[in-house]
Structures are given as C-alpha cells and as structure tokens.
Length: 282
Ligand code: AMP
Ligand code: FE
Ligand code: FE
Ligand code: ZN
Image 1 (cartoon, protein in one colour):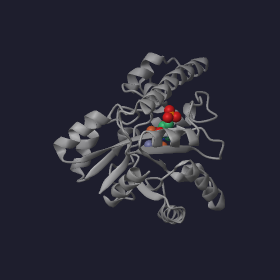
Image 2: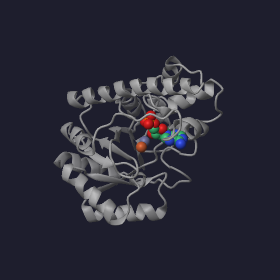
Image 3: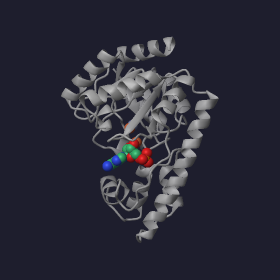
C-alpha cells in the first residue's frame, strides 16, 4: 500500500519529512509522495530517509488554484523533475506571496485587538510555505484560542476577521507548470470543488484539455459513494484515479498516514505504476 498525499513541516504538517517517511515505513507502506503546499523543500530529506527504510519517495506538490467556481480547487503534481528551474522559480514566487499574505493576516488580526506578530507566525511555520495553520498555531501559543479548529472558525475562514485571499495560479497555468516539468497533474479532493453531475464533468473535460491526467478519488474526506462516483467519472474521462490521506500530523489529528479516516484510504501500489506510465507518455 502507498500514500500519495502527505504534508510535512516543509509546509503545514507537524512531522519532519524524514519522520513522515519513518511513520510510513512503520505502517508498511511501500511508497509515499510528499505533497507539501508550494514547496519541494522536504523532498531531499524524505528521499534520503526512504533509501534507509526501503521505501520509495515520489516527488509531489500541492497547489492552490484561483478559480471562480463554487468551491475550492487544489491541484497535485507528481513525478516531475524536482530540479526543473521553471517549477522551482514559480514555487518560490508562490511562497513569497504567502509571506506577504501572512503579514496582511497579522495586520487584520491586530486591527481587531489580537496581539500577534509576523515573527510569531514565522516561528510557528519553521519551514518554507507559511499558511493559515501556522497563524492558528501562533494564536494557540498566544493563548487567544485553544485549538486549530477554533482559530479557523473564529478568525481564519472566509468571512472571518483574519481571512485573506492567497495569490494562486489558474487551472491552466498550474497544469501547464506541472507538465512542463515532466510531471502529471491530478485534481486533489474533487469534492471540495462543490460541483456535481454534468457541471463537474464539463469542468474536468476543460481541465483535460489543459493536460490534466488524474483525479484523487480516494481521500480522507470522501464518502464511499463519492469515491465510487469519482472512480466511474475518471474512467469515463480517461483519467487515472489516485488516492492519499492528506496527512498533516497533529494539525489534522483525525487523519492517519496510509489509512485516512477510520481506514477509508487504502491505495494499492498499482496506482503509482499508472501515474508513472502517464508521466512517461505525456
Ligand atoms: P492556506 O494554504 O494558508 O490557505 O491554508 C490552507 C490549509 O489550512 C489547508 O491545506 C489545510 O491544511 C488547513 N485548513 C483549512 N481549513 C481548516 C480547518 N477548518 N481546520 C484545520 N485546518 C484547516
Ligand atoms: Fe494543508
Ligand atoms: Fe488540499
Ligand atoms: Zn493536502
């Protein structure tokens, strides 16, 4: 079994990249993709640890997408050349925009009387890609809230006083970026698009036109029925189906590496072989 959707301290997970690999080895996984948000910083350490533990580490990344649809779109990239200059440059740009956004979030929180600094948020982030989970951690440490969930509910979700948009790529730009680095693009957790039936199919067809290769049918937040429907839709559109837990360590304590929620994420090795095949022929 494998897990193709995981986060480390390089973005908003709480385990170091090597510790994610160690945990995967303990769970008897044979391969793992680290899919940190907007950064490849964890890849080298994860790969080195994977060599020691006899577990394959696949290059991965997760990108937030600017999109005018009803829900949220995230895109996963796999099997790209990690040293691709265009990809690295674009990810750096996205991380720089994240840092500026963190500053704006801090200013908004200060304006409603929350005493918190960018330095505190950066300390909570530690790694490369600063996000709202790090602001949430800083709010816990400052004694403002007692959990990540409370931080999002009161301050960090859309419509709350500390919310700020993130600069993101369009679907076409993001898919093109992954492809130009030799990789394959997969729509992450498709339920968060909040599209159904014909609207979902039409949107995915548009993405296939840009070079989309896969759909993450198996994910911790999908019901068994949603997984079945997404699998059928992927088959219909000629897309690969992938799966992953979206493990974030203690930032999402109900999600288990290699297992998801109550064991609802089980991904066989054959999924990686299918992805690789796509990457090779793309
Ligand atoms: P950002 O990339 O900074 O917009 O933050 C988005 C990340 O925050 C997601 O990838 C999740 O890891 C996390 N997140 C979003 N909503 C919640 C929530 N309600 N509770 C905990 N974590 C969340
Ligand atoms: Fe995350
Ligand atoms: Fe995501
Ligand atoms: Zn994720």
